[in-house]
Each structure stands twice: as structure tokens, then as C-alpha cells.
Image: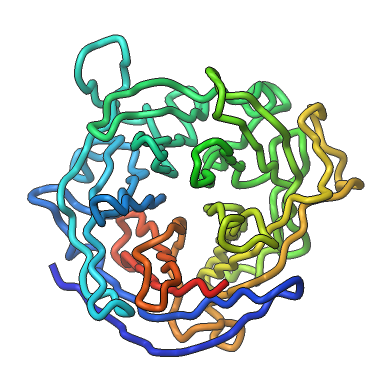
Length: 372
């Protein structure tokens, strides 16, 4: 395995209109797709990250569906040592171990998922050290959100509102479900979002317009998860007209930040791709205050005529160099999480890419300082 550390020491300030929030780019690190292995298992397709400060490790969820035996078993979680030395430079990323997720809570131990039974996309660590993991689809294209022990044993499930379940004329679109989740530090407030609009909520994103996404809020403080509200989040249009046949833009990651940046509830990551052009990544500070609660609307009007959440662009990483805030060519970024506290006392942020086990792509990790 060869890792290529790119210690690009660039300082930039992107100041939000409502207050001072600075994301300072510190370094990047990349591993070629063909170079990363854990024993005989290829490593990659990291679609979500969560940080465990007790152990100093990150959990990286792999979204491979296990349909190709050469790519490994579906439903696996990497334990990653993302080493920063000096503290502002990612010097290595290593797999410490791998946990397989349980598909059957009734059977003792871990019963691994079969091919196509899971498309794991995001992972969160709760204060009581459990894992909340989302899947975009099973064999019937049904998305789910489940709770697991650190050893992978399934402990329970967070119910998904019926409007998200695919059926005739409704529900999440195929492979465009729950890429993004977030959790407050006390573990009581939980969010998830669909990647692009539900079938009944409007069209998918195009270079001319964005797509209407729902951010769903739950209260996890009681005996059972309780839905609190749903808010409309409108993505940006696709950043460039494709030179090939495919292009998209949607919500792929979220992070709860209100305890650090009071003017925002969440950081939301939009990931766009335009064939023949490349990727375009945007991080927005998002405020839910004043936004309409639409949980009782089975279908949204299009275009949405109510009050959507407020969003402020904080960072852009683009394949078009003159549009990018940092000198790194982006890849398929799908993860955002906290990292170790830096010597300044500020938290670090880590972004990571899903390489799709595609040789032209790479496993890319980006390190930032969050300066509130």
C-alpha cells in the first residue's frame, strides 16, 4: 500500500454572512484504489465516517453491496487509524480491523448480510457507544436506519416515515435515499436526509435547478424514537453541463454543529458530478430556525412555496480550478466528521471520498480546522 500525503499549507477564510465561521484547509492524503488492502480484502467505498475520541479511531462504513466476490462481503465497517503528525497533517490512514454488521437480531452473534441486502451509507457514534447506520436499499429497494453494537450485533431500528418507502408514485428514488445523518452530542436529537427529492416531492437536480430534499428530525430521548419535524432543503443546480450522459447533485453528508457554531444547526455536504467534467463539493452552514415543518405533507409543491431552511456556502472544492477554494482536485466526497482536537483547541474536520472501487478514482481524505 502506498499513501501519498499532500501537505498543502494554505489558509483561506470563508466568512458566513450571519457570523464568523472559518474552515482552514490543513492537508490532504490519498491512496490509490489498487493499493489499499486489509489482508485479502480490498479497502474502499467509504461512504460515512464517525469519530470515537475514546479510542482515537474513525469508523468508516463501506457501501459495497457484496455482489462481486472479489470486492468482499456486504455490510462491513472499517476501524481506521487516521494519523495526524504533525497535528495539522494527515500522515497515514490504516485499517486497524473490520467489523461485519448483523442482519438478524433474533439469531445469536453476527449474521452477515447477503449480496444486495444492504447498501450502507452513513454511520454515527452515540454517546453510549452504539452505532447508527443507514442503508439506501435492500433487495426490495427499501431504505432503513438501524442501531448496532460496536461488535456489529444489531440492537434495534429507527422507524422511517411511510412517505419515504418506495411504492407507486411515492418514496425514495433508487439509490438516492439516506446518505446523510447527524446526531447532537447528547444523543437526543437525530437528523437524516434523502439524497434527492422523493418521487412525490419534485424532480431530480439538473444544471437548471436543484432538487427538494427533506431533513427529518427525531427525538431519541424517550423510550422510542419520535419524529419531531421535517424541513425542506433545496440543493444547488448541477454545477456544469455534462460532456457525457450522466450528471447529478444531492445531499450526501451532514454534521451537527450547533454546539460549536450557534448560528447553524448543521453542516450539509452537497456532492455533484458531471461526466466529462468531474466532481464539485459544497459545504453549507444550515439553519432550521423559521423553516416550515412539512412532516404532515405527503407531497411537496414544486417549486416549494413555503420557507425552506437557510443555507450559507462555507466551502467549495471543484474540478473547475477557478471555482475551488483549495488546490486539491476533488473526488467522490461522501463523508464529513470531526477528528482530534487541534493544538489551537479547535476541532478538526475530516472529509473522505467513496472510490467505488474504480481504478481512476482514489481514496481521498481532507483535513480542516473548524474555527468558530
